[in-house]
Image (tube, rainbow over all chains, first blue to last red):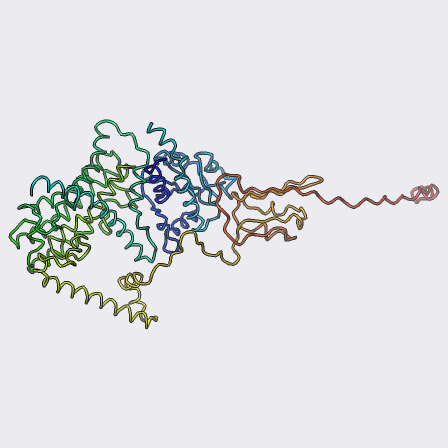
Length: 155
Length: 440
């Protein structure tokens, strides 16, 4: 791996931009994600920026058990993010539909629709757990294995 | 100014080569100042550089045809215009310039705004088009004031040459012009409350919604180049109140002879700034000493608050550090098979089917899926034999769905050996015969 690629991999770890998506969450996890941006936890020290457009994002943070109406939106947004990208499932709901497991308006947990890289458990998870999850996802993005398709495209 | 000098100024100093790091520094400073005002740590120093490199390394969206070409060309033109504007700045004393370069500078500064409007419309996004029309409206609104201010300053000095304007003596009109420029500055930089173009709550990223990867990196760079570029507008007004060009600042400090002439002019401005800071400081002190209910109104004064935050340092926890969990925090459920009696009440009380209890005749299996758990603690409350406890710390993050699952099978204790059932007494035939029923 030459210097240029190593620099780009380092930059991926240093600058994770988030896109936050709610797939029918109770807003508990969403509030904790916002709390991770507040002065006490300050996600910006990791270079995190909450982006408004999925086109700008590297990491998609999805909260909530996936409702039937949210499935198509999740797939669309996942397609709109350009690679390399990672998905962080925030809260027990996104991981496993949690207490709503019997609900008939849900369509399975998140990982039955898109690949999930990091699960942050908790109901809701603490802001520092969310930060750990995002940092872990950024580290996964910076792995050379993740950039292998990019190298393949260049050849 | 011959061609070589012009090219040198455009590409090396103060043009592209020096302006790009200056742009990154401006982007960093913009975010850092906000962070410090909010008592945060804020982004690391190299953050804009890493952002740029990461965007360069992202996958490139396939854009084809004339539309794709247009979408790609706007950010390049925007960076070129902003870099050209920076290259025009009279940072080297007596380095030339030509009559009327102020007009060229103003048009170069205005071009990126035009390119943003064009970019929003060429990206064919609904949000981009709304953002572009807003940008157009805002551009018309502030440019009337901005151009009047700059042209008023120039007219009062009878010259359209940047160098002459930067080193000229002031007139009372100049202060009005500086005031107008300071008011227009946030509008030009799209800072609140003038951020209708990229209002995230309504129209996502406005004209930038569809941009990604290297194109977005160029837009960020163009935005950063505006910072030093705006210094140009300020040096036309001669007083760098809110962030002048860093190179020019350094020259002022070094005592450039061309600037020493107008040194007397800077004094009133500095005195004004000093008095302002002193006044804020006195307010702050009185707050500090006599902070009580009656002073609350003053304590809520936003300027005081910002100033206090500015000097009091950050309250942020550095990243790997985590705050301790509160007393009675409900984390992962732990199971002690020695204490368990196998009653299965925990599975019955579980709200989210996280605990599953499978009894058989000779054994029972207790399985727990933390990914499913609500951490409500009902299982722990219901466990009469205290076999279940909860961690007082956060559950760890995990990467595979079933990574944390736990399952334990326990043999039921063998029942005590059965005593032989007592032998029933031998039936007494005579007694049966003499029952009352027979008598009847």
